[in-house]
Structure formats: C-alpha cells, structure tokens
Amino acid sequence: MGNVIKKIGVMTSGGDSPGMNAAIRAVVRTAKYHGMEVFGIHRGYQGMIEGEISEMEAKDVANIIQRGGTILKTARSKAFMTPEGMAKAYDQLQKHGIEGLVLIGGDGTFRGATAFFKQYTIPAVGLPGTIDKDLAGTDFTIGFDTAVNTAVEAIDKIRDTAEAHDRLFIVEVMGRDAGYIALHSGIACGAEDILIPETATNIEDVLERIDNDERRKKTVHIIVVAEGDEFGGAKELHAAVIQRFPQLDVRSAVLGHIQRGGSPSCADRILASRLGHAAVLALRAGQTQVMAGIINGKIVFTPFENAVKVNSCMSIDMLDMIRVLAV
Ligand code: F6P
Image 1: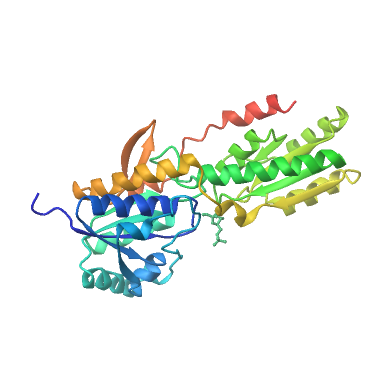
Image 2: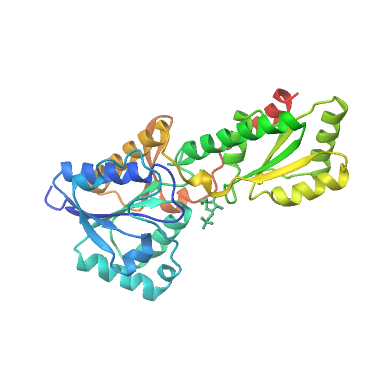
C-alpha cells in the first residue's frame, strides 16, 4: 500500500443540486477515517485556478447532510477551458500537494475533467451531481429526486387552483436538454400531457388532445413541458394554445430555480453518502477518470467520456402510459 493517495481535493462544480453537501460530508469523513488529508476546493474549477483551497476536517462537515446548496460553493468556469486556466489550476493542485480529486457535478464538470486529464495526470473520481439526470452510468443523479419532489409539490398546488377556476395550466420545469424532470413530475402529478426533448413534439397532436378533453368536458388540463423541448417552453406553448382556443382560460408557470434548492430527500442523501464513500475508496484503489454511479442498487464506475454520453435509458413508453392514465 506504499503509494496509496494521502491527500485529496474535493469540489462541486456546475449547477448546484440538493445532496451535494451530503456528498461532500461523505467524501471528507471517509477520507479522514482512512487517515487522509482533504482539501476543499471552493467555487469549482474557477476556485481551483484561483487557489481557493483550504484543508477540511471531519467537524467541518457536521450538520450539513440535510442542507441544500453546497458549502464549497460552485461555478461554471470558462477560464478552465483554456490552456492557461488549466495550467494555473494544475499549479495550484501541485502547490497544495493534492494527489487525487473527487469532482461532484454534471456533464460540464466531466467534460472539463476529460480535457484537463489529457494534459495533466492526476487521479480523479466523479460523482453525478445534477438535478437533470442527464448522465449515463447511474440510475439516478444526486439532486434529481429532490428536484422532482419539489416540482410535484408545486404542480399539485397548481392543480388545486386550476381546478377551482376550470383552467388549463402549462408548467415549465428545468432539465436543460433532458426531459427527466418533466417526465417524472408529470407522471407523479397526473398531468394530461408531458412534452420532452427526447420525443418530437407535434403541436397539432397537443392541441387535438386539448380539444378532445374539451369535448369530454374535462375541466382541468395540465401540461408539463421541459424547458429544453424543441417546440419551446411555457411561453411558446401558451401562445399556441390561446391562438387555437381563445375561449379557454389558460395560465402558465415557470418553476425555475426552486427546483435546485431545498433540503435533499432521503433518497438523495443516501445516494450522495454511498457515492461519496465509494469515490474515496476508488481513488485509494487506484481508479481514475471514472464517475461513480449506482445501477440496480450496485456501485459502478463509468469512464468520464462515457458518462457524458446521452443517457439512453429513458422509458419513452411511459409517455404512452400517461395518455391512458389521464383519461
Ligand atoms: O443543470 C442544472 C440546471 O438547473 C438546468 O436544469 C438549467 O437549464 C440550468 O441549470 C440553469 O442554469 P443557471 O442556474 O446557470 O441559470
């Protein structure tokens, strides 16, 4: 065990997600348990470049497992994607004697890591931290479950008021280019329609379904649309609906960043804890440039370049199901 890593850095990068703190806690506590030194890198790759690096002890991560956001802060760094930025970042890691990294973030984080590690060899293990669930190599990403639950709570409330007024509501949820939040929250809320980027949106079909509901005197119609849907978001859909059905009382809501905040769900805390623990053990075992994930309950490691490939495991057949269930 002569050359087992003794000093590691941990950082969060890209959009924050609920459960990142639970992941940081697991990384720090696992490392300390194994007698390692841990350095927190603040504000992601940007902080790495600027040397915002400080040592962390087990007590520094007390009382954070239940908190949203990230105590290490996060950023999206353009400078890191330049050769100069990467060189500065590497110098800072050398200066602090950091021998391995745990990177908590989404696809931007792992794309950055892939470019960096082509030039500089430092072992790194990633954790999937994003509400979007747009990574391969894991069934769930840290923060997704909480974000979906936040969206569900909001849409349930919207349904109350929609029903009181007999209104048609369009709710736009986050997800960047992915439709997982829309699909899962839409199913859980009994949405009448769900529009996601993974399937072609035919606006005529959407309008026809509204028309059918009208004929059947269905008084409430909720459409959940992913922000990345190719037809557009709530604004575009709203315009198309009122143009065709000027008699309908239509409202729309963009849920926005409330989906990123809040106390992580139990599922996210457990996922973050298991993956944070596994990442440190993986670094100690000599793994590098892989993302830790959980598939069918088992920890698996996927090379960064494969993790960022579009996840093909979305069950599009669930969309057919909602058409049946929303009758
Ligand atoms: O990747 C997470 C995410 O919340 C996406 O769902 C969304 O498109 C994006 O980040 C928003 O980014 P920002 O917080 O920079 O506006």
